Length: 259
Image (cartoon, rainbow, N blue to C red; front, side):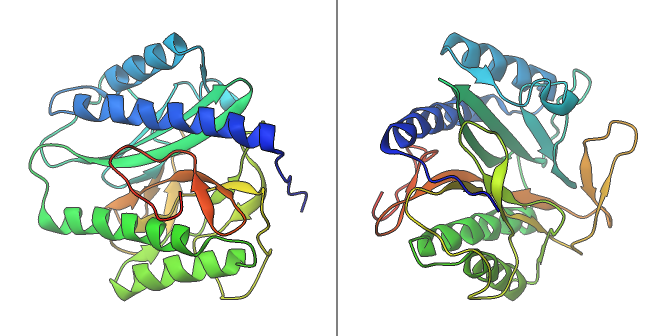
């Protein structure tokens, strides 16, 4: 596993890219209303990212046709924005944004509730965000990747949810997806030991039902839950510091100890 340790100047560029990615999410969230198409959300984000002198990383990445991912209800990840897909009252949607600014990537996603969302869906969204925060809380030198997976899995399963296994967090920097792979399930004490200067994403995908997923064979991207039940995801890009971690994609509504 070739994990790159970032220099101080690279960390600064990660900071800038992460801050812009967070800014894009804060900008787009109010637009996710009943009747708006996911294609329109994509267009607004694309134009905003370009206006900031950055590049939307997903566009043409291995052939992905859009600038953001919009994953609604039972879509786990990699939902393709569409001119015909309108948001409906009660939908939950993950908006996933990755920008490239001065060659470095910032990758982050949020869950948005559209109109009146059922309490069970709100609870899934909340517990999934708690899974992310619980993991961020233990990131520091000496923690293992297994520790991260274990705390996410424990919190999800304690709440009678399941953790998606086929998709995971990843190292990030100049390269969109690099080592290490950051699994959202695992065994405490197992795997790579974290060091200062490592940068990666944590992005738990949590299902209301069973963990199994299926890939849409027609578009080659859209991943849904196999049982048709809801899925939620939150994501941050972070760097390991001397005594914890810095959340590069932190939004203004969030507060983290030590960052």
